[in-house]
Amino acid sequence: MQDTDVKQQLEAELEKAADVNEVENIRVAYLGKKGYITELLKNLKDLKGEQKKEFGQKINILKAEADAKITERIELLKKQRIERMIEKSEQYDVTLPCTLEQGSYHPITLVQREVEEIFESMGFTVEDYSEIVDDYHCFEALNIPKHHPARDMQDTYYLDNGQLLKTHTSAAQNAIMRKYGAPLRAIFPGRCFRNESTDACHENTFFQMEGMMIDENISISNLIYFMKVMLSDVFKQDIKVRLRPGFFPFVEPGFELDINCLICGGKGCPSCKNSGWLELCPCGMIHPNVLKAGGIDTDKYTGFAFGLGLTRLAMMKYGIKDIRDLNSGNLKVLSQFENI
Ligand code: DAH
Image (cartoon, rainbow, N blue to C red; front, side, top):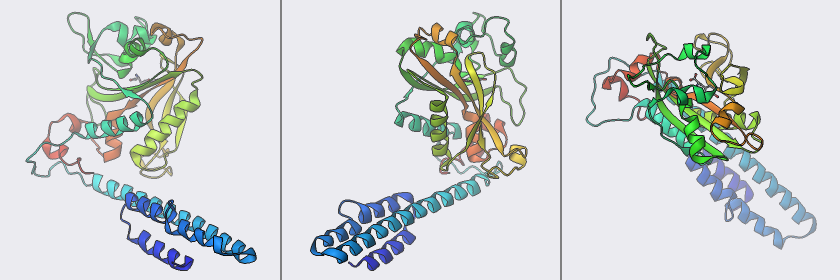
């Protein structure tokens, strides 16, 4: 095939490709080891001097153009997929009749699995932890002594034996440090409870996903990197993040991590209260007292931790406006998310 034919054929095939996988197959067919463009290069050996030089340059330009066209098509397909997702998620309807014959996954389970897969691919293990914990694990081991004002925001349900329903997934940090020691990469999703009055944004039962990475030389840059990769993967687009100072006794420094608003792209709209940013994930560098309580050598190791609001993430991803829909057990609502 001539180089001009290759170009035309590539453009026609890219135009027809309906998803990213198809485009990747096209990339292999053209730029892979035995791809059309790579094959063209083999003609070089029959040419000499000026002709050889010219042909070589031509093929290199063709290669660069092909690469750019492939990337452009992938970007377009990704963008169209997000637009379809947003369109679909905006259509979820609380009053639709339920036509379910078979069960379906809960939207939080769907988001949880997606985040788990992303972190697993980056070497994190997924841990399980009890919903009933003691005061030490929920508070004291996290540098929140008795009577510390930080406890006010985390009132919960106490059992007669003094144990309590965990208020945050951070309650598992100590046990996981003790179980594995350093270095360590783990995420631990879980159901959390707080004594809250409920409204469209607040529930007494919700889900978080905690993450910890402890190793030598871990810094805030590692934290930002992992959060950006994870969020860009969940939302299937490049996500901008920003950190603001935030106080949590178990991290120092502590941050609130915001992402650029996905609805308006950062320009400002009612969903982001016109700020262009959405608060998503508190995080920080694990406080030395917390590492010590977990038996970690603080001269050698540092680490970051984050507490991703899974419920919040599911609401943002699927455009769910009332948090109470999620715990309603209403199949008319819950069955609509599986294929989004
Ligand atoms: N556990 C905190 C809460 O639920 C959230 C949190 C903040 C978790 C900072 C973290 C962190 O791991 O580093 O309010």
